[in-house]
Image (cartoon, rainbow, N blue to C red; front, side, top):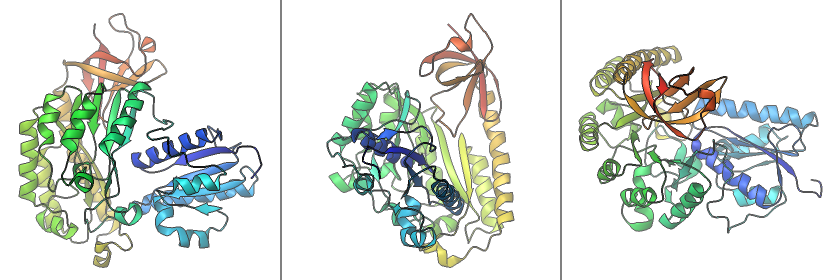
Length: 436
């Protein structure tokens, strides 16, 4: 490396947890007086933060690494550094197969990465990040790793066991984010519901929510709540605190008791039904999002049909679905992968067609209603925002286009709230006009 501070570009793949890791790295680079580039061309160092969750994510990560190798061969960058989940899990194999990469690091190796770049990790920068989201919303990671024993999941292999951040650490980071202008705080972790058990001997998510609510964010949103041993003590907090969104992302992965048992999810179909009913009863109007896996090794057609019936009954407001991916070293790996790719895709299609009907029905009920909408961006005279019931990137957008009631969308401001009347809907989008 040259003696001057390096110019660094960080490319992030995968989930919001990776995004937060990259933002911490960028803040550390800035504290070391490195130059932060907005594109890889022109940088000295390209850092790729990889994802290794499922096979398609691995393939995407390797494709980007190989693109970085080509850039290095062409003299467009001097150094290529790879970090993140894929690198953590397969560092030895990757270094053997792609020797052009200068260094491989895991997800929690920021001090070593800074040293590789010629800097020092600043331990006094608690909560410091260079945000890569729009400045009005961001993610706050309250824990690392996971202790849940899910048979299909390699996350504990890549990120280790569950480690809660201290409540004081989280609040300090949250206060800095609020001071910087963040209005929507999105809490993330591999399993939010486990929060505090390792540090304090009990689950303390309810207390954490109340503390964060007092800091003054307009919206606080919860992602990734594990259904087994769900801490129902958070429900009154969600209900009573106006700035905690009536929204919960609870990945259930499946609904058939037989499949759930093989997945080692710690719940049954009946327990899921009872929990969802309790959540909706205690927090009236809450919108629930879930994710599912299809094609798990013991998912017969009968088990899949049971899941379809469950979805028709429960009618989740938001839903995502993924094909089962056979992962090395997981408990389910020895079950093989008997459901064909085509069959998995057919099952995904069937679920999403059902969910499209459910979402359309839910959205139709919003026509004529007025609600606060947070504007995320304005493009070509059209404003795009979200209600409290929608998370960035995965849920409905509210589209505001054309002049109405004296408001032109081009005069709206991103990061501001506006009162919007819903005038039309699609299955996964809302359309509205600004109301005084």
